[in-house]
Image (cartoon, rainbow, N blue to C red):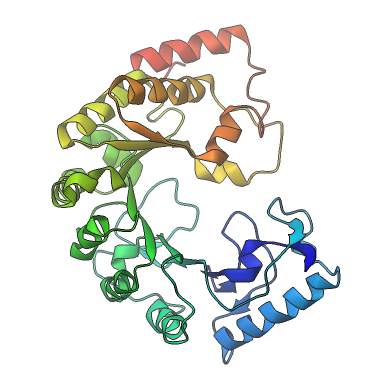
Length: 342
């Protein structure tokens, strides 16, 4: 049947901030079913069926009406299969990054999520036959490896041959992640290092765990063997922090020493959610973004795209090119010297 809908309504589940939803954290989508509600999971699935029927009749949820994922085409009938699950652990983290938008509670011990346990939810989907080898599961922060149930969930998903991505700070080594990287599916892990030295790491992450992260990365790469390209080391660029040539050069030295094959770059992720064309991104951030790509090419590393970050830097979100010549000169000096220019 031809109607306006999207893949997320037809087969996605997000275990988000405080309730079930269908869309990722950037696009809000239909209202939450809060975890505290009785039979919340069942209510979420009943709501899914109701929304699909309404969309077939041309009734689009208000928060979906401007979504770029909305598409009018011949959609297959809903068969209950889940193509994507996103597991968020917003509650706890073993770092205290200054750029964190959710301000997870810092802790050094493993915790369960305060709001929900992901394991029984995923087990239920598995028992109902709703997970397939095409199902993609993404684990995000806080820090996924802090969840008590994380190794057990990962093991179950690997046994189901699902495709998995883990976004981690890399402080805590997890043996099941090594197994995940070695599996036949194109599983991957992205570790945000964001710098190339211990001192910068302490400023950004606000914990002294730089050496631990490097050890974790080395173990994953060594244990992944010929699949080590599935580990991606990420560099988020921040003005007046790491937006300079020296820090990026140090980052790539680390990558070479650890034999990292895949990297990615981004800008402050909070900026991606601002609805404005007047915000100015510093020229040094743009220069760093461009220089990072050149260095990845120089050292033969695969640069994975971050589409929303590209959109910001390419001036699709901000009016970032309207900067005075003097500001550009200062930014260039700062980028080259690695120092803040007054």
